[in-house]
Length: 206
Image (cartoon, rainbow, N blue to C red; front, side, top):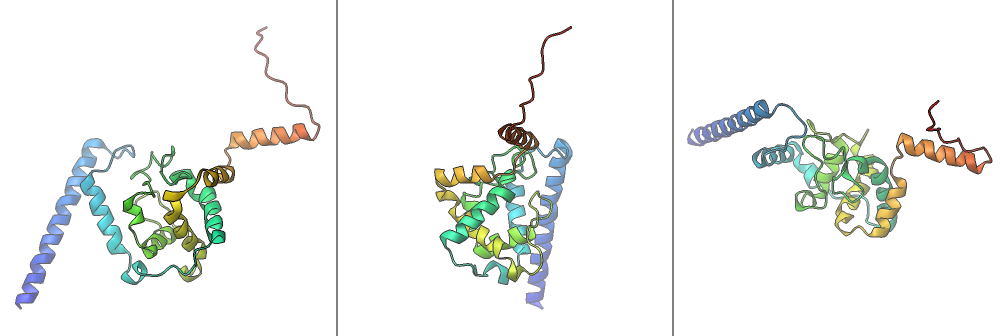
């Protein structure tokens, strides 16, 4: 009975603390509104990270990476990251992009300890399943055991602190093109094929 009473007290304290923190976060949101530009308080970040960790099954946290590290796997992941992830996270993983800095919470710097200290299994789980109430989508589909692309991305995330200028230049060429860039490329291709380049708009007023 004593053990059960202690567990009930611990549970009550945990729930009371959680309710207090959530109430405080709600109060801050009431004062600042629901602007995505707001900066999360350190306590809110700490709580979110703890909840995220608890949401990942233990067996998933300790899952080993089934993809052996190799230059080929890293190259594939680098191209995948440049095409799918860099829009929010930037090629270097800093998160310094217009989208990454204007979501709530902001895209983290993947090179820092907060991300690099996560296990391979935790990184895979986040990539495959996404994170609720954030801008991080679930990239995996189907059977997680067959999602080797996400495991390759884990290797790339580990490599981010050591990314070379040559790799960054290669990734820049693989980034998705904007509508304006695509139109410019199409116009240039037409010019190479012998079509006349469009005449610049005249600034003369009649």
